Image 1 (cartoon, rainbow, N blue to C red):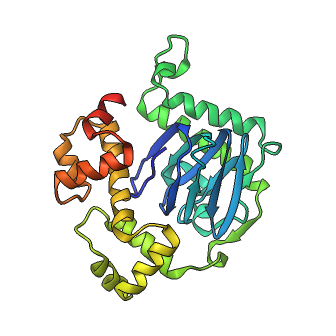
Image 2 (cartoon, rainbow, N blue to C red; image 1 turned 120 degrees about the horizontal axis):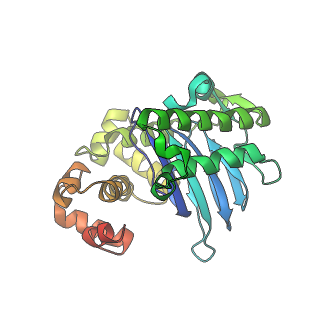
Length: 277
C-alpha cells in the first residue's frame, strides 16, 4: 500500500499486500481497508486501535492517521482509496463528521460489505476484467466508474449506520501537528526547508522541529523525503516516465540524493524497483 498526498478529482485505487508502517499523514480521499491476516495498530483521530484479521476500517477525509506494523509479525490488508466523487450522497457526511471509532470488528462486518469490497477488487484486477464470461468485459470506462461508485456507496450505506458519528471539530486538537502535516502534504514537491515551512506556518524552526521529531519519530528532512519517495515509487509503478523526471518532479534536488534515499527505503535502486513491479 502506498499513501496519497495529492487530491486528484477521480482517484480510484485498490491495493492488496502486506501492511506497512507509515507515519501520521492526511489526505482528502476516502479510505477503507480490510485486515486479511495478522495484526497491526493504527492511530486515527487522536486514538490508538489494535487491528486484527477480519476487521474493517473507514478513514474519512481530513483525518490524521498512521499505521504501525511489527516487522516480526507481518500482516496483510486490502486497501481502497478513492476521491470523494465516488461517495455520492454521502459526500456532505464525509466532510462534516467521522466515526468516533472507525473500526468495525470482524463479527460486525456484514456479507454485503464484504461482497462490495470484493467486487471493487475485481474491477481493479486486469485478469478478472479480461475474463470472457465477466459482464465487466462489455462495460466502457464510464460504466465501470458508475459501477465502482455504486459499490463504494453500498459500503457507506452498510457501514455508516453502524458507527457513532462525531463532528470533526470535536476531535482532539493538535493544531500545530495538523497544520504541519497538511502543509507538507500540499508542498512536499516544492523546494521547502524547515525554516521556510516554519515561517509559512508562523512557528519558530525550533518548535516545528521538536514537534516533528517527537510526534513523527523522524526529523523534518526524513519525513519530507518519505513523502517524495511515496510519490516517486507510485510514478515508477504506474508510468514509464524517465526516472530522472520522476526524481525532480518528486522534489529531490539531485538524482544522487534521490537514488540514495530510495535505496535506503526500498533496498533496491529505482530501476530495479520498476523492473519488479
